[in-house]
Amino acid sequence: MMKILCLFLWSAFICAAPVKVVTTLPVLKSITEEIGGKLVSVQSLAEPTQDAHFVQPKPTFMKKVRHAQLFIEVGMDLELWAQKVVDSAGNPKVQQAQAGRVMASAGVEPLEVPAVLSREYGDIHPYGNPHIWLDPVRVKKMAENIALALGNIDPKHEESYEKNLKAFKEKIDKELVVWEKKAKAIKDKQILTYHRSWSYFAKRFGFDVVGYVEVKPGIPPTPRHRDAIIKLVKREKVKTILMELFYDPTAPDYIAKKTGAKVVQVPIDVGAVPEAKDYFSLITYILDKLAS
Ligand SMILES: [Zn+2]
Image (tube, rainbow, N blue to C red; front, side, top):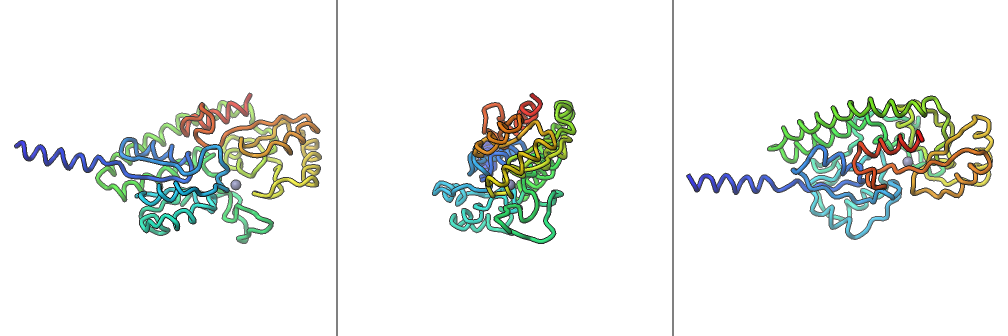
């Protein structure tokens, strides 16, 4: 009897070893932890205060990825640096088309897909807009992809992942009611954004993005573009310039000074400010900032 019990406990211990997951971004870490709970051990490569497009890979990245069972990225070429990290890590399990490689954006309806694939003038959104996590409804599909991958790699706990996914989706639906109430303050407002990262968020919460401080995604403003934007802001009576914390505020501040619009700086990833401790509080924080 004792022997059987020990055997049971021993195998339970082995089973309890958490799945090692590496994500490119903290927001993916947050979603994975919602789905995996104690069954996963997740590390994010990028810091929440970094521009997700341009992260300088560090030697510690390779070390983390070498031992990962799952590697989760947004995809759509958002993380231009991710494949380089995987290639250097020498872990075949997380190479493309393997069970250990997860593109969280798979199957999510994209916005702004160009008619032809192009990186003309440095456009860093060649497959459409990759900032999909800023739409809480599309995030449900991302969470589904993550839950599916966890179930594949750890079939013993498939039911737990499914249960947590269901709870995550229900929480999104519940919070959405609160978020939409907060968003009434920005409904139908004309807003200028620094980067083309707010398309999903704007569509979900009902405001218009009338222009961008950047010339093109990834291309910083030139004086000529900035002056054209000033005219646009005046013409469209734009009151808000929305930008991420990590962009240079020089041009937005200049535009604000010339037009009377207000610059609102917000995080777009979990942990960039102490209040944004998980996915839900991140969306709440952004909406509160905008509404105020
Ligand atoms: Zn972008």
